[in-house]
Length: 248
Length: 118
Length: 131
Image (cartoon, rainbow over all chains, first blue to last red; front, side, top):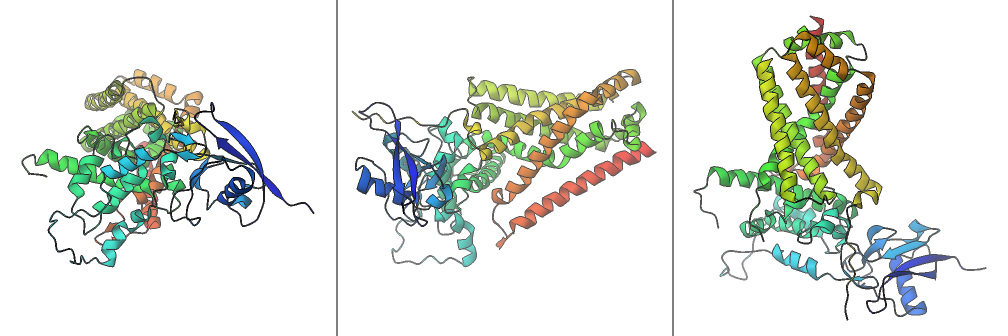
């Protein structure tokens, strides 16, 4: 009895070897295999020159994001059985510069994350480091959804605005800005809003909403951005009507 | 980067217009342009010359229509502007915005003038 | 020599999959909504002139081919309404006064509002037409 197989069409790119091509690999099919298992099979038994990022294999680390049949997906969560009988086309995430094969350059994303200060900001830095900051379940509930982000960048690959505006801060970083702005323990809202209320912040977004569709953690960045727009509009009129108020 | 954006102003008008467009436009189209030609008598009669002048008689009705039309115009023009930008229209962004909001302002002003002249 | 490859989504992004295309149709609805608003504005304009001018414009608006356009515009307008109502829950703050508002409740309220506005408008116009 011959073993069932499935065909992978893998995007190959080596900067020194001309333009990108697709290379086909026949890999064993198993009901419980995900695309990442198939890629690891290729790497281990067929072609060791194939490059891709991965780590946890369980949807936590956010490193194995790729385009699977055109959909930004975590390859550790994309089952082969959902793509039978194949072929399965595997490409690097779109909207990012490709370094090699399935590996993209994430430096731009890291810089954008940095802009929104995705950590608790306390104005009184001299605070006792052992101090506790209490939070009620209701206060936690305000931002919890937006805190589930694993920085897998699928939302950036889904966003047509990212393709047009290099500087657009983008879904994940804006959702994280909102996550900390909604946190009762945080005091950095003014600083973050100075960044996200610029054109390259929330205002480039046209609510295509695909970021929320592809998010493996149901963060709903599109919703976060709209909520920030509402706050941005209220804040804009406040500044217009009370220009004498001092703001940091 | 560029400092806080004035887009908040346009977006807030757009958002208000979006709500009004969602609520009013389907009914507006049906009432003014579908029921009449389909021969529903009461609706056909409401758009005779005397009928529409009756509809537009009260100052409050005219004010409401003017405000709703103006905001829906901003909604539509703002969205068309962003559609043009999202389709990578090879024109300066400022020019697209000028044409879009200029068009919305023209619709708003003309509607006000026309309502005043009925 | 390191030459990263550029793979940004271009201007044809809306052709790539159904979900993009549905959003594209939502954006295109604005052209139809603008057209209907301008038609209505001109109807008001003609109502301010003599009866003959008004009726000529009204009959143009009610021409069968124009009615086909109005029905297409109606479909787009409804698409705007539906998409707008469905995304509203995620665009609004998740809590009001510390209580979470269920998405289905927000969506239901909006459609109830649409029904109320539509029925009231119908009744008003029909009443004016009947008297």
